[in-house]
Amino acid sequence: MVALYVAATVVTLMQLLRRHERRLLPLLALFTCMAVARALDPASGWATAFEVAAIAAGLVLLAMLSPRHSAVR
Image 1 (cartoon, rainbow, N blue to C red):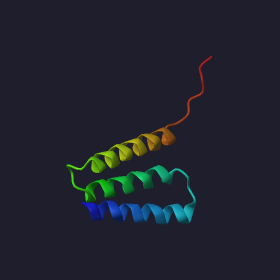
Image 2: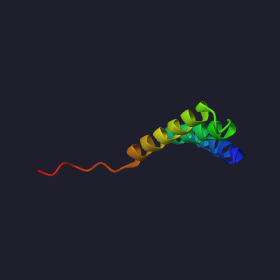
Image 3: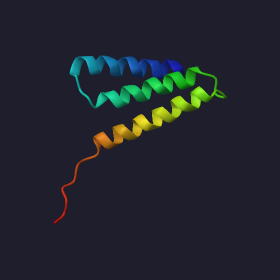
Image 4: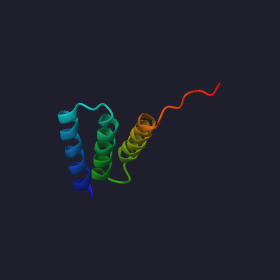
């Protein structure tokens, strides 16, 4: 499973360097945090911290991709 997260991190990094798209940064953080969390011992506090950081990165990505609605008058 770690290898899949590492591969996703590498592909996302390559796309970030090629396209310079800022919306890829939270996705890169999500994949990186999940790869580190899965590589650590599940009972470790650090693994939990990296999983929480991955969740936060996912929420930031969701906020960045959500459409902006104009206020109703």
